[in-house]
Image (cartoon, rainbow, N blue to C red; front, side, top):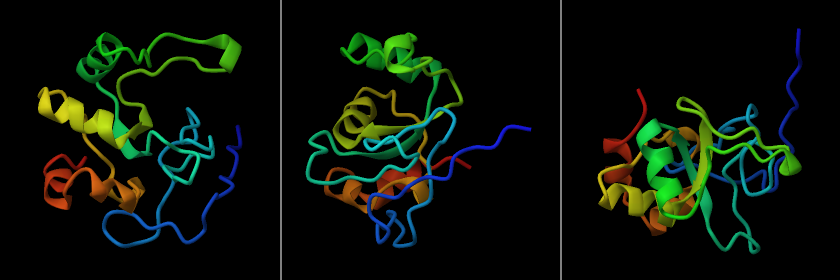
Length: 131
């Protein structure tokens, strides 16, 4: 049996877009600007990595074509590459770009940081919520 690490929170008071406690997005693979499994943000996160998204083949291809290859393994960074079905903290602006291109992946609302609402409305996020 493998035990997964417990996320060390950057901000224990972080809230999700629904106003509740921000829950982890993914510990396998470990995601987040702070690589703690949560889509937290702070003063050094200029990309606003706050959207917990469920990867799809279409989005991964879109992201790669847009200059952010998330699917190719990078062993030097202990990164196996993302696959469809993985959850990952995306930059809110990149998610919005994908939305405008018709390629936006579904989001996990409870794991998406409230700062996302500065870029994307709650109604749009709810329209793209994972079941």
